[in-house]
Amino acid sequence: MISYDRFKNNFQEYLTMVDTTQPINFLEIGMFEGVTTRWVLDNILHNPQSVFHGVEPNPSIIPEDIQKHPQTHIYPTHSLEVLPNLSPNYYHMCYIDADHRAFCVLADSVMAWRLMCVGGHMIWDDYFYRWIKEMEPDVPSMRSKEAIDTFLMSIDGCHDVIFVDDNQICIQKTKGYYYYDSAL
Image (cartoon, rainbow, N blue to C red; front, side, top):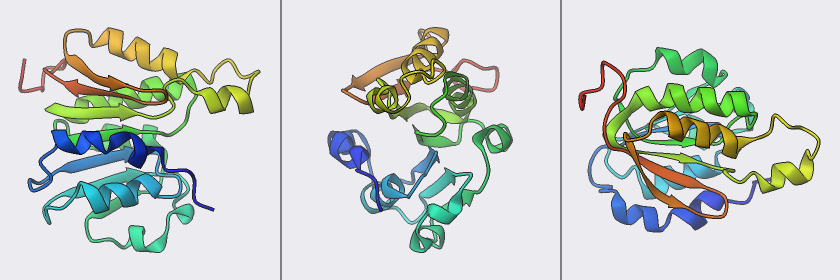
């Protein structure tokens, strides 16, 4: 069963900010069933030089056509294992929708930030984590919003908030924060 595709519904307007004729390097942390992946491949990665990198510890749930797509590379492991090994300043877009525990959201955000090009966009799903509260009301560690807000506070002055809707938040990296970021 394929999950509801919130990415498509919320990011149609995002396409107006992206030149899909140019090469785009896209990173998705937490692919689940590949719904967002398919939408990105169909609507954003039009240039044959564009690449999609996905991190999913359970790749068996990703449809085979996505796994074999020529523009995709899937890392079948947890983000904490692969993100430190990826090239900094490489990705134009990053979509984070993996482990929703606060520590993991914060860790994914910090590690993905160094991978983002200045001008790139980082998008989090489940910002207000409403469905998590309904499913797991007694799990205090399921606090995506608090982790994201802590991360955004730590990079104050290095990003612009593009939008916040009822479930997602998108920022643009306006300057680097680390010594290897070209904008410092």
